[in-house]
Image (tube, rainbow, N blue to C red):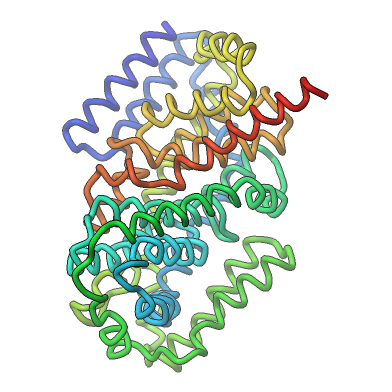
Length: 433
C-alpha cells in the first residue's frame, strides 16, 4: 500500500511536469492520496485532518513571514532600493570581469531580497540581457547568475528557505546563518576564481548597455534609497526577531515610495499587495513582488507541511526510512543527507517539498544544529540543479537563460562537494591522530 501510494504520487508529478500543469495541482493530488492512505490505515477523517494540522501548525509563523517578504520585495522595487543597487553596480561590469560581476551582483541582490526567484527576475534578467549584447555565452552567464541567486536564497537575513529550515529543525535562525558562513567561504572563493578565469577566456564584444541610465530616468536614485537595506542588516546583526527585521524594512521603504519616488498612498498599497509595475519598458525586469507573488509559495508550504504531519504519524515512509538507515551505516550524516536531498529534489520538483522530505528522512542522523546546516548545504542548493524542478527552472526561464546553465552554476556544486571533501579530510586526520 505504501509503495502504491508513493508511486502514484510520483506518476502524477511526472505527468504534471511533462504536460506543463502547475506543480501545485500535483501537490494537491498528492495530499489527497496521502490522506486516503491514512484513512485506509484505520484513521478516521477527523484524525487525518488533525495529522495535517499537526504538520502545518509549526510553520504558521513562516507563512506570515512569506507574506511580509512579498510586501518588502515589492516596496523595495518601487522605493528605488533594487534599482539603485543595479544602477550603482552595473557600470563596473567589463567584458573580462562580466561573469565574475554577474555572480557577485546576483549574490548581493539575493542577500538583500532573500529570494532566488526575485534575484533572477531582476539582476539576473539584466545581466543576461547585457551578456547577449556583449556576445557572452548565455549558458555561462546564466550559471553565474543562478549561483549568485542561490547564494542569498541559502544565506540572507530574510531568506525564506533559511527561515523554513530553522523552523522545522527548531534551531536558532541567526545561529544557522553564522554556521553557514563557515561552510560557504571556500565554495564562494572557488566560484569567484572559476568565473574570473572563465571570463578572461571567453571573448566579449562590447561593454555593458546603458542600464544605469534607463533606471536613473525612471527612479530617484539618491543615496537615501539605501536606508531600508541598511536598517535590515543593522537589525539583523543585532539579532532582532526576524519578523521585526522584515517589518522594519517595509516601514523604512514606505516614506521613500511616498516622498522620494512620488507615489501616492493608493499606489503604495497596491504595490504591497499586487507588486511593482515597471514605469517604462526599459525597467520591465524590475516588475514583481507583493503579496500576490508569494501566494504560490504559501500554497506549496501549507500543502507540503500537511504531508509532513501524515508522514510522521503513519507508516508511509517506513520502507524508505529503512533504506536511509542502511545508507547512514556506510556514509557520513552529511553524505547521507545529500543522497536523500538529490532524490527528494528530483521527485518533488520544488525546493520546499524537497526540504520537508529530506528533513523527514534524515532528521535523526545528526544533532539539530548540525542537521540544519546539512540541509542548507545540500537540499537547499541541490533543488536548483534539477532541470524539471521549478527551483532552478523558473529562475533561469525568468532571466532568459537556457536550462543548460545549471551545469555552470558553480556555487551550487561547490558547497556540497567542499563539505564532502573537508569531511573526508577530517576523518582521515582523526584516524591518524
